[in-house]
Image 1 (cartoon, rainbow, N blue to C red):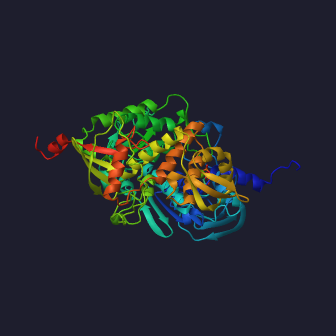
Image 2: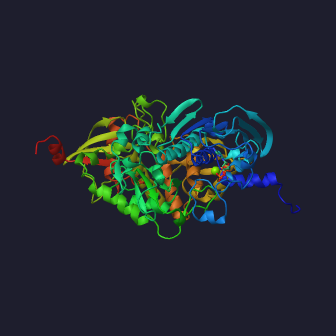
Image 3: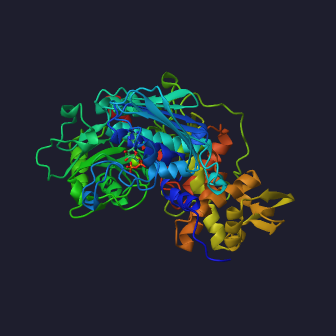
Length: 607
Ligand code: ADP
Ligand code: MG
């Protein structure tokens, strides 16, 4: 093929990919523009997770009729005058790329009017080409509607996640900006239903309440030397008038150690009003909780960092969510501020360690009857286990868990947990047992995961992983990337007990499965393993293997919500007693919680 200069349209589509990765990036760019325009009210409407429509309306300063076409050109911005300005960016935008990039990969309608103009201008574009322009009646402000995102880039469309995932990412961006700008009224609706809104009162507490619900918001602890209540009317994340402008401040709110999640998504960081991703600062927050949280669990934190704009380089990545600190870094300031808050907060009541497992699934997350339709983020692990708030679906005895092995489970010489007697089951999720010193609550899913994991490792050690043939074989169709992945890891999959044969382009015949997974749907089980392989963020083969084995065990383990018969519970406890590491599941979450006789007596005021 001859070498060719890309057409400008193609070049802009490629560049667009950097800025507009997915619907949530469009929401982010449009909301940032509205904030930069000084809006006091921002209304965001989304249809089908943003594929069909993303519309952001603001009451900001508007775009003048003479400028509106320029706004959609590449590198067109009103926020940078010369190269010097790049050294101290005070606005969220500055690259002049977002509108151009968005219009290159969608159909855009923009209506805007400045306060000085008598009428507004309506401009439509498709694939970066202007298709119409007219004068219209409009209130001051800007409305940008983005329809049929990626209609002209099918390759991108294919890689979009499910509508729910895209919705979740959009929700995350909007709630972040709502936190940083409590003086702006935000309203987000999905498919014509308002799912989130803030009052624009200027009070961060109001926004926290709207996002987290009163149960969680009530527990949050203030961090740092800044009294946030004194800044009612300014952008919290970008406080001006904070004494010396050269100062470095870290402030905000953190959750008590009893509130924790399975991922870092609830650690939110802002530098001068900009939401950023920074693994080092996230680590600073996690470090501050050192020893206070169970392994593998992460706190809730909303931390605002304020420092001179000249010390922050935001021109690192097109998405502007990464920054580089030119001189001092806020790491120590953040860590000290959070740690101090935690140390000063009242000592944890003994009972709260007992209720830890429960706190991980905050009712506010999964939606509650009193806040209908409000769903910012569901703890994925909890959702997967069906551990959402509300009445648990009762199921008949499932009697399907492979409990064989209980008879042969040999107690180790140095058992790590005492011999226990099964008392019963609560919430179809926990087994209650009695031991020599009080009672235990056992998370049936976590415990079963642990049991299966040790069993699997033992089989592997003996090179005798049990495989179970599928009578007829199951044909699976994969996407090309998945097929590539499967071929790449065919040895590993074979060692784990999968027998897979090619069966046409991107199709495979599943002949056998790890025996552990015998009760699962073969296609789904294989997909779960592929998903684990897809994450591909683990360079070491061994680590990858361990992750895949953990995933197999997780898939095979009894779920919460499953009623267990007494023999099943007894079998599970016998096998847990025989485990080398019975205290945690393979992912590090606790399998059991102990409430000693002494603790019981204290709680009941007997001593
Ligand atoms: P940037 O934000 O980096 O300047 P964009 O492509 O996002 O680049 O926007 C280009 C220009 O269009 C902005 O600099 C601004 O002047 C104008 N603009 C975009 N959105 C709005 C808005 N909602 N209100 C007022 N002006 C806007
Ligand atoms: Mg912008």
